[in-house]
Amino acid sequence: MIEALIETVRKRFDGMGDPRKGKNISHSFGDVCMAGYSVFHLQSPSFLAHQERLQKKFSSHNGATLFGFKEIPSDNQIRNVLDQVDPEDLKGLFEDLHAKVDLSSFKAEEGLMVALDGVYFFSSEKISCQCCLKRDHDGKVRHYHAMLVPALIHPEQKCALPMAPEFIQNADGTEKQDCELNSAKRWCASQKEWLSQNKVTLLGDDLFSRGPIVTQLMSYPNVRFIFVAKETSHSYLYQWIRGYEPVDIESYKTTETEGQKKRIYTYKVYHKVPLNGDLKSPEVTYFEMEVVDGKGKRIYFNTFVTNHQVTAKNIHKIAGMGRNRWRIENEAFNILKTKGYNLQHNFGHGKKHLSNVLACFNLLAFLIHHLSEVLCETYRKLRACYGARVRFFQDISFALSFQIFPSWDTFLLFILDISQPRKSSN
Image 1: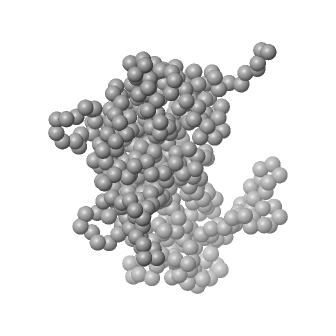
Image 2: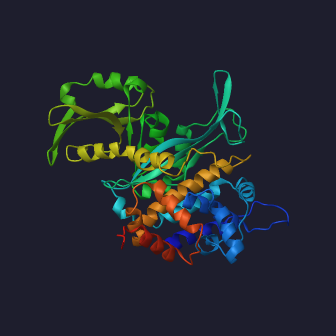
Image 3: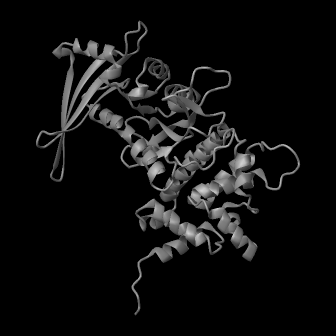
């Protein structure tokens, strides 16, 4: 199955236009892209250097057998080529990979859940490129990169599958700096048909519960949202709900018990609340969610706005969906930053698109690793042998540095075999 995923990547690279000009081209565009991707797939900066050593000794290497690139380009060649690649051309690759996902297993309530959140992955006072954003602080200019990452959220499992990112960057000829909210509006507009067809509920923090994007989403058929709405940024909304009579406030309570743990969920629901003070303000449903333990100690509280039809029968599910927005932080960004993927490391900046392209490659590797775990039994067994991803990446990279494997199946079975605990015969 992993071969099929890698082949999907290769086909997309081969189908992209080569941005290079001139005749002095020693490596195919697809080979350069695959070589660059392989480093992220294995999370091994030294992978290509090890393959050069194997190539000299055996006239072959794992880049050819596992990733399909014959010649090994240098790091500088890879960076120079990828710097010219528009990240927009990589969006189809995410779609190709998501086509392998069984969406029926991701359904919650009546459709899918997609969490929206932004992440920074580069910051420097000295290095910059044409895609950098800028921030002035204490008289110094800091350049940085950021992207909005939509992620498909599973209603029950700890899972957040990243979709193609929308990069937060200034467009040519614009003076106003781009922001996370604007990137979310662009992404939603570009995905309008997909969002409507799959009856998607969008999840997000307080940043997204703003008039423009809420109005935009409410104009899309079958599209719902559940966004956090804090009092500090929604003063008009909170003034409005404080004027509600007790008879107009719906209150619900649900109790769940698991073993000796008891959780009491209390909800207050306010219908037809104006999101802000504008004359054309959209009307939303506002609800509060409080969770206390069996001793009455509060363990969670939050407030949301939604366009779901909230009733006594579905409020517990709707609120649970709203809480699921945290999975993009816990099951995606936290792993990408601290569990072996090193998302915020500067792998190369370039003058044009390099930093953004490499961030895409990191997201692709993360997505393919998860799909491998779901679709490939051998890979799933192998991952179960390891706790930390860092050690997993270290071990497979070490194995690939001294032996050539003819296929992914052969390689995974080899690693699985040596990973099993053994008792010494002595």
